[in-house]
Image (cartoon, rainbow, N blue to C red; front, side, top):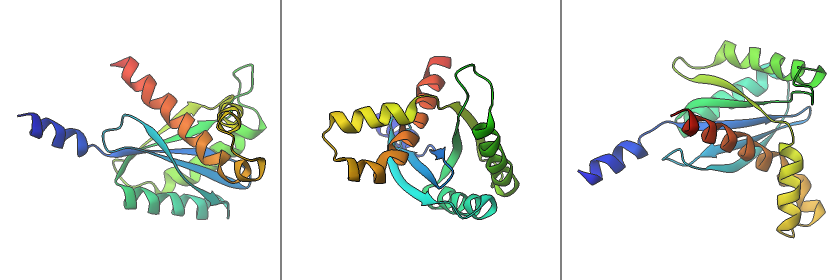
Length: 153
């Protein structure tokens, strides 16, 4: 019976986290059990429709059932200029999202700063941090969403 339960957990679709910036999109992916988020890679932006197609390819490659997009709310909680740019990307992604894949927004305030602090604490050199910060921020966004899902029950 235990092995059946383990198999069921492993067959869950993964979740993909996105940290959408003006030049890159940081990517993170859950493990098979959807317990932890792990940095995946970084996409160089080519435009909303091209970026959306690249994300859809990753969805197919990794068996993704949920896409979590970091929303850069302002400190006041309102959507400012950066959030409107992310929403334009989200609209392009919705237009090509495969049936059954759910799209979620997650507050991303402070995730890049938090990722930067963690990388500094790990003694990652400044030049290397620039290359990995976006995917680590995406992992923090995705982990925040996972934790919120568990709290909701």
